[in-house]
Amino acid sequence: MRKHTSHTPERAVLEKVEKRELVEALFTLSVTFHEVLILYYFEEMTTVEIAKLVACPEATIRTRLQRARKQLANRLIDYEWEELRHESI
Image 1: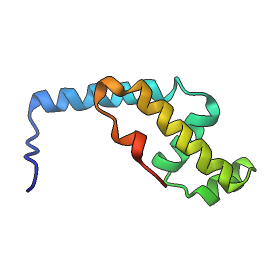
Image 2 (image 1 turned 90 degrees about the vertical axis):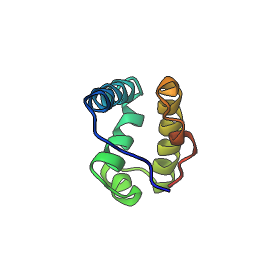
Image 3 (image 1 turned 30 degrees about the horizontal axis):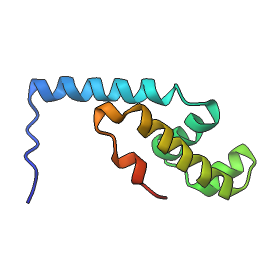
């Protein structure tokens, strides 16, 4: 069954707050961690591309992504971002 996703003014405000909280939490991470999250999710780069860009092994990028997602999820626990904890590449 589909969720009802009406776009009410309240929902719009909530989405803005969630986005602001996400960005704030993202930048509380170390540069190493927020860098890989930005490149992977916002720039839509692959782990191979990121590894080439930052000159490190792809396995290191996968590990950084996993650790960064876990740290970010811990910071967002109050905002129901639990799914980040369980996401895999």
